[in-house]
Length: 332
Image 1 (cartoon, rainbow, N blue to C red):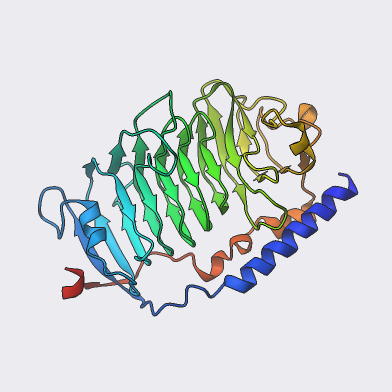
Image 2 (cartoon, rainbow, N blue to C red):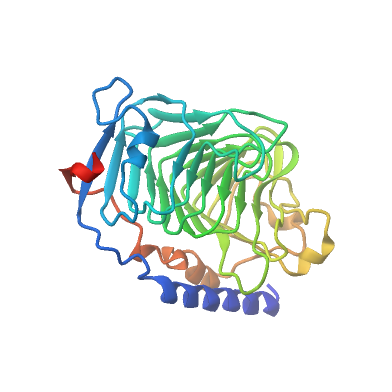
């Protein structure tokens, strides 16, 4: 690896940690260890029959953990978690059991089935899908709040599936499917043990990260993931000139084309993007024919980059609540 790569990584690490130290305790609201439990059940045996109604009932400027448990079923809703309603968890009870579905296309901020604008949001065991199909932008999930985490979720569409827009985000054991730029945006995100499935039948990109200047502390890191596909795709292309994506310890099937990356028809971006791989494996991970403007991480560089510290996760990624309490009148 050329010395310039090491310098680039050092700048990356120092700016990221400056960002984390400045904002690690930004979520110091008066949350309690016990969560308010709200149940959504289409059969009428819960507190609400629609997910959006349960979200609407949370007071503005909420400072308590609210756990919205959604019983299994197909919920045909277009969901928005407003910016003034932090500390909400929406959880299904089992994988593939709670399906939130819509069919819409158009601009990326208008078409999402599920939009998260609030900070400190958690999604668990949800299937979020936009069934529009090929032919237009059709976002399934938009995440524009800070400190958002998703566990065991399935996110599917065709074009622009996951708008990983702004903020710090964590995705664990999620399945994400699409064909064109299906993970895109300018968030600072860690994807751990996720399964990415490409529907591309040509050379469409999995990621389109939008970092636009060297001062932005954003980028996508994929750690211990798996990539499969129906035919062929590249790992990413630069929506922003300083696009930053790292794949580490990831299985890549032969769906990944040998060149690995695409410059989106603009060769000037080759000198500014940060596209790296680290100890990936599988038939699509052969670095012999990768574009020369991508690279590999060294072990010491990977130690700094491949932890939750890169998103300040230790201060905000929360586990399942251990205690629950009933909603007060203001939540009813």
